[in-house]
Length: 165
Image 1 (cartoon, rainbow, N blue to C red):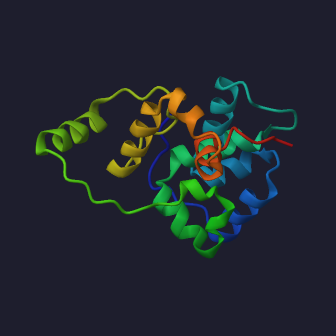
Image 2: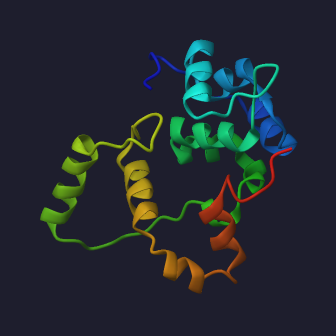
Image 3: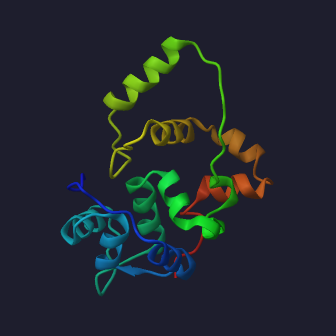
């Protein structure tokens, strides 16, 4: 599903309230959070079989769409000091890697060509594509080895590791 541009990220108050409440949200509220139309949210909720009575959407589904809709950097900037509402393991780190140019070129090209059926909205920034790509490469055996690392586990399973109310 691709939303029509221009889309506006949620403001600080809306985003912090949503992340703090951790409750099912209305289709309209999800539309405002993710920058989609109400009809797009309804279609996606039906496709994902998550539409609840009263046109509500489970919190975890809404957070998943939020992460698919906005670069993590944008959400972190919007949250500011309230970034702690997201798992610590999702905090952004700047890294400097030395990679062969052909690998970087391959990844940039792949980011434009790869079919991403698991994403509701394609990543718009290369770093978000890399996050998605690397997350999919995480081996479940390694994730099991890191199960005692709370920051890793919370980020790895976010937003589906908690309970929806």
